[in-house]
Amino acid sequence: MGTGGEVWYVHLRCYRCCLWPRQIDWVKERQSGGGGGGGGGVGGSAVRIALGKHMSIDDRRYRVYRPHNSALSVLIIRRARRQDAGVYRCNLSGSTTRHKYMILNVTGTV
Image (cartoon, rainbow, N blue to C red):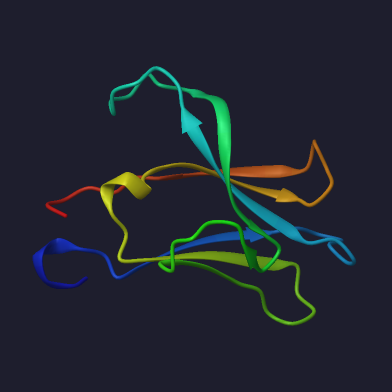
């Protein structure tokens, strides 16, 4: 934690068995239903964050760490903000069925 309640780093971990030679892609789902409360489900288009270790967005707070010869991929968000909250998905690249969802909640006075 930093001053004023901000979180310095958020780590979202995704592990996929039998990864080689594929990579893991990261996506942030857009919430449907508007307003930031509970009720909005996953829907609409998604924002691609990274393809493997290659970033697709121009936000230097985001990066992907992947240990060499590992099936682990970690999406790191520095200085998390409320607008970073949402549903994140990691996909096995090229697959439409092998994915995992994670929910990031950001609370406090940030």
